[in-house]
Length: 289
Image: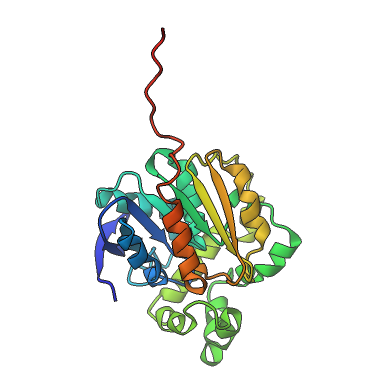
């Protein structure tokens, strides 16, 4: 078990792992994970010469768990990541995200192009694609609607020894560990609030703003066995990337790519991070003759 530290930033206590030396890589997990998701990637990246920072995002793991829905807006969580990197003296990290962590990484990348080096998104594509989901994607992500009912969702997920939650999760991810983590005081509501703050039906009524382009070199990775997110979300993300874009499909993996295909994910990360010249890299102006 890797040692965690804690820092208070943006009004919340964030627990995080900080290992290795070299160019910084920030790993962002999703629901209902924690930094433990990255246990196969952290040693490989450290051995590859990187400094790896893996926080428990707010609401998860050992970090603070505000109970208000509004505490989990995307901008607030992006600000958590910015504040954490500033606290740790990191100006321009590589950013790697899975699930909700990928959504945060995308938003971070297009809002702060000068504070990111490379971007890797696992499973979840650019929010511009997900803003207009197909009916097939709506059917696959039905659980997002179910999670919208405060109190009711929590009660039904816990009932009969977490039977419904087990049926939704199947044997995917760290399914046994999730039950222990979500049994912590306030943890289930905190996790569901990510969906309530960002994927409520009312959110679709808002006017969709134009997304600034992602200037950083970006890599999207999707598993062919993903039952929650269709390939269309990742494959179409390149149209929002102005920097170098690469898409990789892993056949023998589902939604939890860092666990289902750790060796392939590690190989892709080590082969991609630091290889492309950042799109925002400052260049000396040409001298006029």
